[in-house]
Image (cartoon, rainbow, N blue to C red; front, side):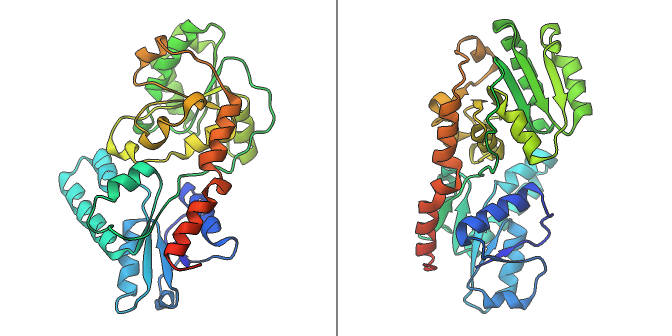
Length: 321
């Protein structure tokens, strides 16, 4: 088995996720290539992480019996439409995606809901699959949790709904006096702009903004916080997703405040999460953190050991073991 790293930037989120996937499937002895050549025809299986990799790899394999495993990381056509608003682009990408499903011999999905969605296609029927969510290599550092501490870790892109999160914190600040809001983002300028426009006077006195780079900095930041926000719109792109942020929060014992859009995981968090559909719901729910349940959920669904059985079955179906 060889992994297609073509045009994947080293140390990017996709690169790190690819390394985790490769290690889970093959241990430390996995191969990868960054430039195409006909030497990939020597491999029995090639793992590709997007439609362009699948299409180019298929071209290099024409006439051979080598097989492609398509690691589907999201609904690319829907994501493109959200970003560009082009119906023509959407339709073209949908056609390409279906070709990739046809050309592939096995699939890796990031969530059960994604599996259910794509398994309806005639092109995926009867082919092996693996559900492999985005997992985290962060660990709880043993820090004492700061009482009534809420955090946000991430960027300022529109789909991450940071203004809505600030609005939610306005409500929480009134509901739970003494609450603090810790923000870690690399886009501090946009973050401060949103705070100035949306945050209440009550909330502004309890906000801190930092920019983090190293793994240990992120672990320390999350390990001190009781609650973390993961707010997404209820659309297909989010419904099939497995956000790395969810795994990172849980791995550091953070109780997740989440919307039902993350279909596969919001419904199973139980005491490790608080599911809300809107800001108004914050008035009705009890904001109680549960460190031990968060860690337990991480170990059950998002740790490497939890995925070992699924990986073994997948490899057996591919006849690699």
